[in-house]
Length: 292
Image 1 (cartoon, rainbow, N blue to C red):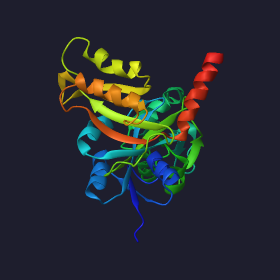
Image 2 (image 1 turned 45 degrees about the vertical axis):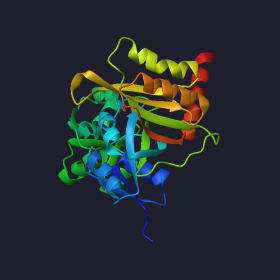
Image 3 (image 1 turned 180 degrees about the horizontal axis):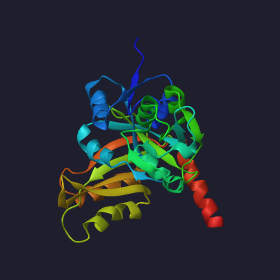
């Protein structure tokens, strides 16, 4: 039987590649040039799963994903959290003083903004971190550096000039795992996350009314983001994560109330899946902040 494939956007050695290897060691990681290509590979059956970054604790959301998810017909079946450790690398023999430019994915550049400002090198946006490492290796120019993973440095034969240069030690990227069919998750068997999108009616206080059911039913909303639909300033779509299973009474009532105040047929559940154990660190961190 052929090994299951899990696709990711980027080149070998990207953080998404590392997430695939850690989260699904029994699957074969397969790189894709773009997010659209990764979505298509899963939708067409060429791959079983897709590992897609959706947000970083320092650099924020990966905006493309919010536009691709609602129309992809794919389902979120799991999530994965990857602590990000960015390495500054260059060809062998180069030094920090040699560097005049540093290239990487825009998210990685954002995660290392303060370090790069001190370094004083020109930054260049690349398609992904590992791709930047490959390009720098192929160029053989000591004045060019890349920010990527330790794995990328090993794959492309680069020297690491500075380790763990991310501005915040808590820098973590959250990935969603996509499949053609929804996950089979029963209520009452541990923490569950439900992800959905919706558009509210164009009436006063519509969003306030739509979300009121989550408060009155004790449902914790961990994520709520908005973005325009097809460039229309008057049409806003919301992307949300909540704790709980849609079959649980509280969340069921909240979703019914949300549907009442939303545009017809705009409420779509994108996934119901187990909460990753990393989420337990959120509560610990909040407790420490309150104590101090």
